[in-house]
Image (cartoon, one colour):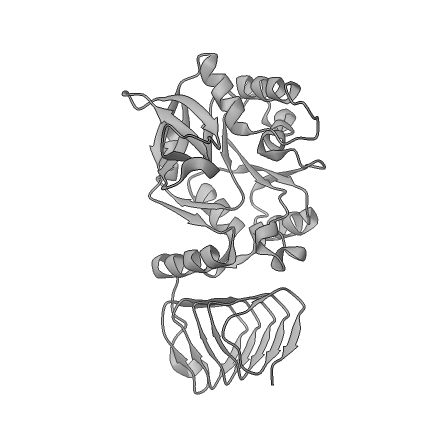
Length: 330
């Protein structure tokens, strides 16, 4: 079993943070988005990973090689933005006919990973959504098998959305369908979808089973990232205690505070994640994510996303600040 993780996207909805940091390395609940994904698969027994990198790809490579030296990791560069279908297609030589588990690099889901990986056949992760028009949609038969897949249908016949989790046994057929769909493009630089290739496989006789995810965490925009941070902190986070570790500071869990932080005369929490070596003094912070090596003095923050190496002085209520920013609100 090999895992394919496409992480080549520019993450435009999370700018300014993604000007300097790949979306997959944005911090959430004390880890990066990518770490949640890799840890989940590694704990279930996956040892070989293929990362499809592009925008700021060297940062992804450096992070993975430093954090996961015990895993067998490969990196494929996606030079052209031709979508997830193209990202998967360029892994063909590395896959070499083996079974794969594909998961998008900005998708954190809760499901029984080990059971799905050990199940026979091909499986797709699904979640019921209110408005399926912005997703790949699965139409299910009475037997629970998937009969048809449609990418972003204008008139959906189902509200079961693909969440970006794909266990594929028939990988050679998948690559053939990807090549076939790419050949149907009117413009060779257009994006082409993995969903269409999977539907091509269904038409050729491949059977896809479905599994439902318990939770699907949206990390693509500031507001949903902060909501996901709060939920994941409640599930997996831990309060930094005892309070005397930080001078004259009150910690209201759940919070995650990385190593090397200096926090004094402050009120932190709930739902706060702070990166390593950050300094906070005379501040109140709740419902926020603070990057590493940031400096905050006399600020009141709520629902804020602060990048690494940011320096903030003064008073504010809600900010969306990228890396290497310096602000004086005094």
